[in-house]
Image 1: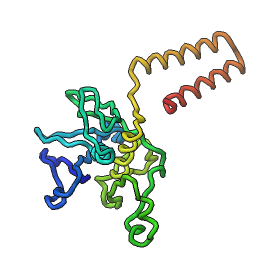
Image 2 (image 1 turned 120 degrees about the vertical axis):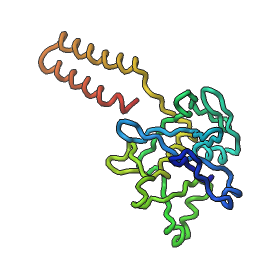
Image 3 (image 1 turned 90 degrees about the vertical axis):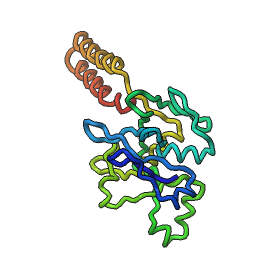
Image 4 (image 1 turned 60 degrees about the vertical axis):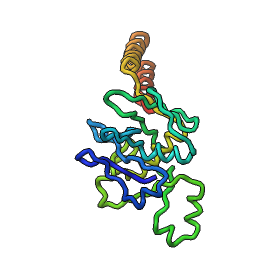
Length: 221
């Protein structure tokens, strides 16, 4: 599956014809950085230029790996029996939240290793492999993620994480505003009840426990 992206003029920048002719598919490589902190939490599973639409690189890779077609509906996509809850709206082209795996969970094999280590190729056998560059000069191909901890992540690794999200079917969903409000209200009421019923050390210990719950709940969710 070869990569394509939209230029600033809104035209697809495709691979040359000699490469396209033998490709199993072509997928776009666009991310969707958050407008407030520029962190990449999701990607659009489709992008269009006029009537010319392309699926994301990770989705195309899944389609080829499953030897299947992408069956579309307004609420999501089906690829070889794998349901992907990515609805199309008037403003968003099927966004999907990326469930990033822990750092190091996706193995890396360098071109240097492939050239100099005979066993390196065996690590790739039977796997879906994302090929890309991680050079420091490729600044436009590196983004901040929720797992960056100050270090940007290469775009090819972001797409690999997106593929793992689709393949595993472990999808994240945004918490509703009402859910967040009710949770915060519940914490406030619990804290008030603790200090209404108790005093001294027991009250402060339970208050500390509520504080711990408040910090751990978003991570657990």
